Length: 144
Image (cartoon, rainbow, N blue to C red):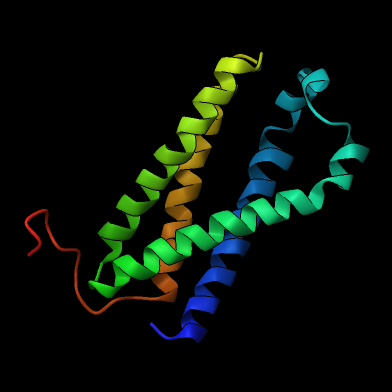
């Protein structure tokens, strides 16, 4: 994969992550967060830390993209992209479970975070696949 396609994939992943984060946290979970407002930053304080959110989203997009680029070198197909998304979502979910264990979060929030995290990761993986469609299919576990 050439550097221009890697950069395009990175930008696409960053946009997908940023947009879905907004839909998940800014729209869908907004009322859940409002019910537990004492656990979160104020809207004004959140705005002051917005750059940190974007830096975090960029780092996730960078890691996701570079893992996909390496997998795509082997000719991975859409099924590999979906599997990558599921596993990246599960990886993300580990931190979510830990956070839920140490912070008194609203009931049901953990399940919503895990579900949306896995779905978001699958979507990002599909976006990466569409930006860089490898020539071959996903090798099976025997490497064939």
